[in-house]
Image 1 (cartoon, one colour):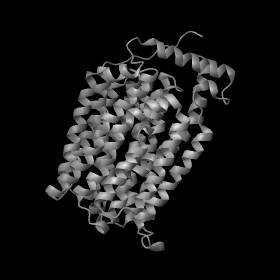
Image 2 (cartoon, rainbow, N blue to C red; image 1 turned 30 degrees about the horizontal axis):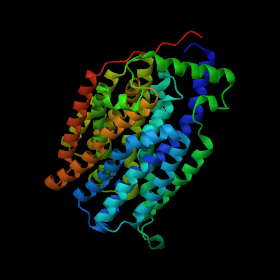
Image 3 (cartoon, helix red, strand yellow; image 1 turned 45 degrees about the vertical axis):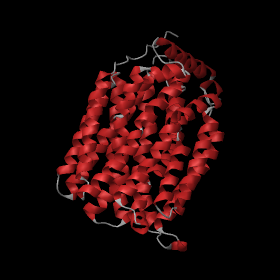
Image 4 (cartoon, one colour; image 1 turned 90 degrees about the vertical axis):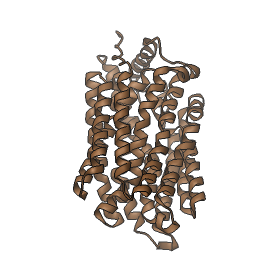
Amino acid sequence: MTDPALESAAARVRRRLVPFLFLCYIFAYLDRINVGFAALQMNAALGFSAAVYGFGAGIFFLSYTALEIPSNIILARVGARRWIARIMISWGLISAAMMFVRDAPTFYAMRFLLGAAEAGFFPGIIYYLTRWVPARERARTVAGFMTAVVTAGIVGGPVSGALLSLDGAGGLAGWQWMFLLEGLPAAAMGLVVLGVLKETPDQATWLTPDERHALTSQLAAESAVVSDRAVGVRDALRHRWLWVLALVYFVVPVALYAFGFFLPQILQAAFAGTPFQTGVLSAVPYLAGAIGMVVTSRHSDRTGERRWHIAASAGVAGLAFMGAAFVVGPVPSLALLSVAMLGLASMFGPFWTLATSFVSGEGAAAGIALINSVGNIGGFIGPYAVGFLHDATGGFAAGLAVVGLIVVGGGALVLLVPERGQVPVPNP
């Protein structure tokens, strides 16, 4: 960007919106994966096998997937502010109500409802950012927002471990306290959303008139540059490269949620520590992921290249997952799982920048939701496969190896997608 007003506007957007959306996504991701820490106590207390737990953890993604596209279309029509607030309030209350789970059927039902409540949140935010952030800034901005995934792991592990230590206080189990005290803040944040978010840059009083003009002009010019973009809902659902990208993205939830839902159990089995110690150790892979995500996204923005950044990151992640299946000892296992998370998280920024280059207008809402919904079927398959293979083999090695192979396949598939060049900046 060469226009000073545009550079200033983009910087203000990053400072104003990204930290707030980042905080919202921390609550979303934490409420999605904290069941992994609850399992340290809940599985024994309620008699859940690894397969029962894996199915319940993954069933979240069936309702989430089914409602992604309708939810994002509604968001595009009624506005991000009201719809994101609705999502956060409903999912926070349902997450807190997980404390009332008593058996497998209620566990399945509550996880299914949680997925329905949260459907549309992540793709809605990605769509929202396309209405605020120029293409040349998008990978690093998306990565900045998505570091919430790894930050939730860094912060959520110790916090969840500490909350499990409340076991018996007030007549509640530690896992019940954890669901309650991590769910209610999400609902409260939903109310804050109503007062903070603006729909588009032209409503942002915190931008100067010159900044608003420069930013809206740039975004409008970018939207008109590529003639084969999907601009409507039907266009998006019929766009062949969006379906290929959805298959590529499928590998991310397979690995991310197999990892997130079972990491506490893998670490506890390896290190035999207390819940709090397990939570602290679980932060290490997510810290590696945060570093990889930021560095890779900045390099992708600087070079303008997306596909090879995604493919190389997937290769690193997949090989590390497979390596973790065969090493012996807790320290090598933790090291390889950290490398796996580093590679996996490094895919996020370049992937969503590439994906959003194929869509525009209402088609962006539908297309992003399509990719996220089809991809998140992997969020069901990954945890269930790892749980099933654990019960069949007595360990996590087979599940990690399968996850690694899937991730490598996704990295190869993305190379079939055409690279979209940097969108030129119009003369002011």
